[in-house]
Image 1 (cartoon, rainbow, N blue to C red):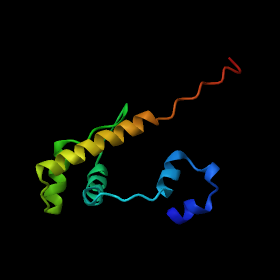
Image 2: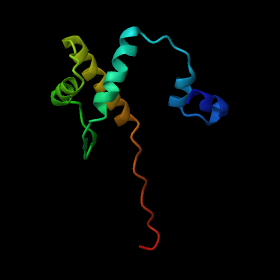
Image 3: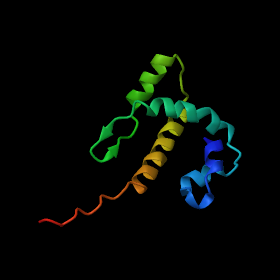
Length: 104
C-alpha cells in the first residue's frame, strides 16, 4: 500500500493516508497486539449507530479458537485500542447529504 500512496501527489492524499507515509517507530507492544486486535475486531457487530464495542465474549471466543491466552493487561489494551478506534470512526463519520428539494 505504501508503494501505491507514494505515487499519488501529496495534495491529493487524505490526512490518514499522509500519516501512513510518515515513518514512525512502533512500540513492540503495539506490534504484538495490533494483529490480535484486528483478528478479534473482524467479529465486531454493527449496530444502528455504527460499530459496537468489542465484548468479553469475542475475546474469550478468540482465545478458545486460537488456543492463546491473553494476560489481563493485554485484554485491557485490546479494549482501549477498540475505544480509540471507535472514537476515530465516530469523529470521521460522513454526514448525510441534504436531500434535493427539486420536484417537491
